[in-house]
Length: 234
Image (tube, rainbow, N blue to C red; front, side):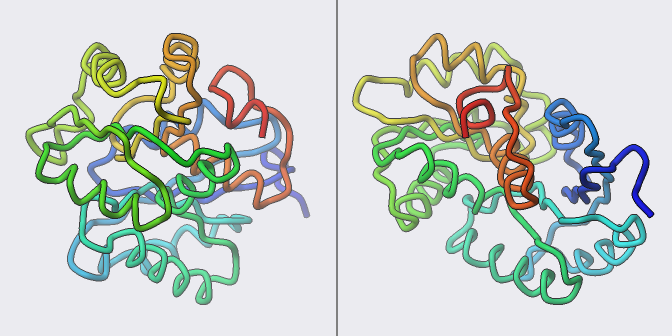
């Protein structure tokens, strides 16, 4: 039997419990015939999350075709590699593709042919240094990086759109191929088209990149217009 509303795909979306941005942003990107089914997990420790597998087991009751983990871990030393290992273990357990936002960011930059990039984060300069190191370890040259300096992780979701616009303006230049945004709690998807037009550079927003990577992994190749170059043209 085929899911009536999700006859093309049911996507399981997992995000940190405090994150109120991933769910609405990914829902705005959903093509007809695809549904997103949510489950939350708590962050913590070297394992990224101690209850990730347990919460994924619950989500598997919805029979998803893939799991999209709405999390970037670029702010910690070796964070993307740790997240990739955790997702690989989860994929082996559940038997379906498990995608994550950090890996999706890098894949999107490669598809766009971006080598020299600027990076926008929700963090301060100290954390930005770790983000820069992780991004360069992935093979990209970080020309500029700037954060919105949210006071805490839960407060990232409170970042104003004006503050986000200002940070993009601060890092945009003719010297870069693209602008990368990390931090899945930073609300950006609605601004992608506007900011690409203003700065004349493709933007890889982590939530959009995660959904793009998930759709393409599932063989859904159609354009999703209105949310930037990545989803429209790739």
